Image 1: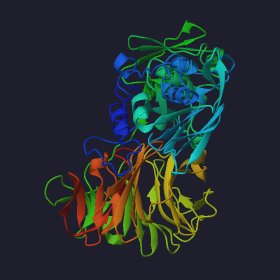
Image 2: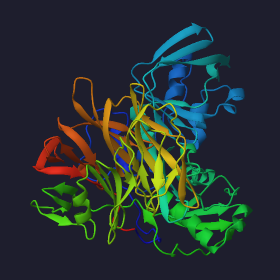
Image 3: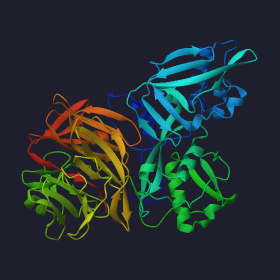
Amino acid sequence: MRSTGLSTRTGRTVVALLVGALLLSGCAGIPREGGVRAGQPDVVDDSPTQVFLPSGPQRDASAEGILRGFIDAASSPEGNYAIAREFLTSDFTSSWDPSAGVTVDDGTGRVITEVDAQNIEVALTPRAEVSARGEFRGLDPLPVSLDYAFRQVDGQWRISAAPNGTVIDETTFNDVFSASALYFFSPGFDALVPDLRWFPRGASAPTKIVNAVLSGPSSWLVGAVATAFPEGTALTADAVQVVGRNAMVDLNTEALNADRITLQRMKAQLTASLPEGMQVEIAIDQNAQNIQDLGVGDLAVNPRVDARALVLRDGAFGFLAASGQTVTPVDGISEAVTSLNPTAVTLASGQRVAVALTADGVYRVRAGNESTLIDSRSGLIDPSIDSAGYSWSVPAKRPNELLVFGSTIESIPVLTPWPEATSIQSLKVSRDGTRLLVVYTIGTEARMAVAGIIRKDGVPVEIGAPLQLTFDIGTPIDAAWIDELTVASLSTLVGGAKQITVQGIGGVRTELESPTDAVSLAGSNSLRDVRVLTAGGGLSVQRGVGWQKRLDGVSLLATQQGLTG
């Protein structure tokens, strides 16, 4: 939990550097320092060294030369893609829409074929795409063809027809685009939830960020998060004026429907979404608004967990000391957990409630109360618990029989969006309680996905359409949240090797080698602090480019959901 003034915000210094280094890099190694979190660049990227300015069309260039120049020039968004438009006929300039999306390839496999004197085809293999809303998606490496038409204007070839959007190689993409976490609220307006988008760097970036916030969350988050902005709220002009470090946001009259607390929430959303250090000043129809920082209670932003590993070792359940092998019990919880002889435990935020999987089913353990068997069905997977105190449980072979339990033993069915799933291996609620990380199998294909949790009066009732993250992770074993925008899965590949797949939600995927006999993993507050439990009871942590066993005798590696409730 943190002050709602948002004077400091989560992850601003990480995404621009980390994602740029890893974008589309496959197994290119993972930085071991710092978290993998959403964030904005520290400054608006409008300095000359960060602006890509390609050349305009060369006189008497061939149609193919004009095409190559156009593709290069379309990498620069400066002046509404002014340089790229120089390659187009005057009638096509106004109809070409570069904002329709971005196709990212490696730049080396493009094949240009002249169909006839006025038509050229470009074949390439996309590695990723970015939608018009800035949503990033990795793609299977399947070739596509793009068609371009040409016409001579005053003796010079110009493009008269081309696909909307732009084509950029991955190196240039890293230079031109950066990731921004847009923030929306949990339904109870007690937490900020990130939605990662990608926008061109430069002076127009704040305008694109604000417009994206006003347009609402990505489709997979609709119904799971809320926005403070009244319906129909928009910029009076399509520009956010930045003066020094102040972003002047002038909204239309729809914003007049906002009361004081709503205005504070609107300011909090924009402040969290814009680059760090940028102050937000909101006007409505050119009338400046005096809006104080949100100061009603606390607002969760990227909830953190105890940095110590939570384990069951030699009959003791608790936090492992930073040095040595001492286990510090969780007050009111540890003794009850140990008596259940569990195979999996999740400790709720606030550390006063836990759910445990045992041979008899799932128990809820509440400090000061007797443990309660809440789900006695057979074949259950590791349970989860959300920030509102609901326990989540589902059988591995019946993935659509998902139940949640509140403060009683009464079960509440939750509608799931994977009717074709044949089994489910992992289900973990995000620490902010708005999203679900799930690994399930359809036939022989395992999928890792995230989905929004839709609630009615605070009660989970439905899981939204999943955002598929990976399709080829091998045979899944376990999964975990690393932070608010990063998840990881543990799986067995063909041949028996173990692999950890790290996936940014709305970002890149990277593979990380795993201890050969890993059986479970747990996240902490950064990627370098991921822990792995091996079949022999060894607790391993990352050291350099490999793994180091920290101690033996661990029978269970538990999941934490936060420090405060």
